[in-house]
Image (tube, rainbow, N blue to C red; front, side):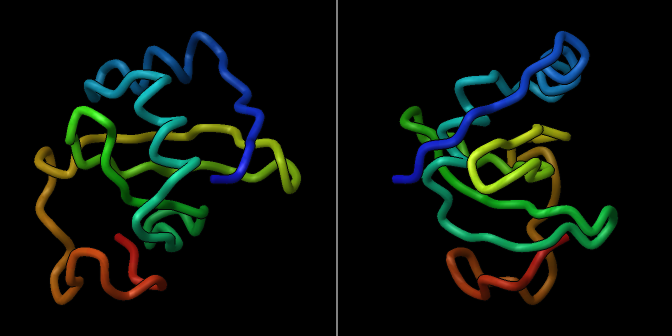
Length: 96
């Protein structure tokens, strides 16, 4: 599992909390994703993964450098439909 530094601001933490995602959830999924991709809406890197509690979370972020991640948004997959024609754990390049 890679090591990343996450840049958290109160605004970002509050935004994720509005979607029911904690900082710990976000860091856990980004550090150990099941699938990587690029967000169709923003063009930013994104990933899908499961927390230790079994929650499926989708995360969007920016890479400041190879070790520094700036969270952008995240939400539980159950909050949104699974992308059409995107198998779970499948295409590493597929993204919403």
